[in-house]
Length: 163
Image (cartoon, rainbow, N blue to C red):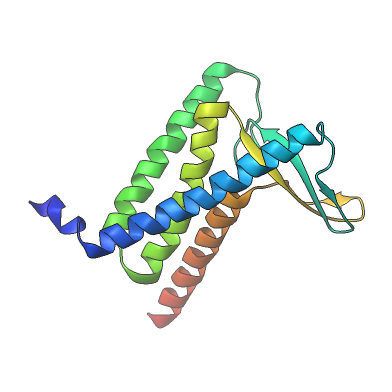
């Protein structure tokens, strides 16, 4: 019975928001993969500060921990799924801006773990650069995760100052 209190009008709203963010991520990735096939793996967009070019990331955030070993990849994916479940539990236990921040992180993580499971890699394609200096290549799910983490940090700083 205690679990039923989570399934109300706001649960439906939050679920729709999560599915919308997930859909935005999926649509952008599918579109870029499609454009990559049409352009025969050339730049989809190349400009002074922004390139759009598909890169398959087999590691974690920003291409870290890219190893060619399947066992490590599977263990890493399992750990990520476990963390996503913890974030889901935290979403259910929080309210307000903290809940919103966790939903951003959850939605982005869900989008990337989907790719890890079905493609064995995450399609990254946004490449900001100044001259020859390139930032890490990322995707829309990474933007959601980053915004959620930044909001959580701001919230913690604000709450600590309040105390």
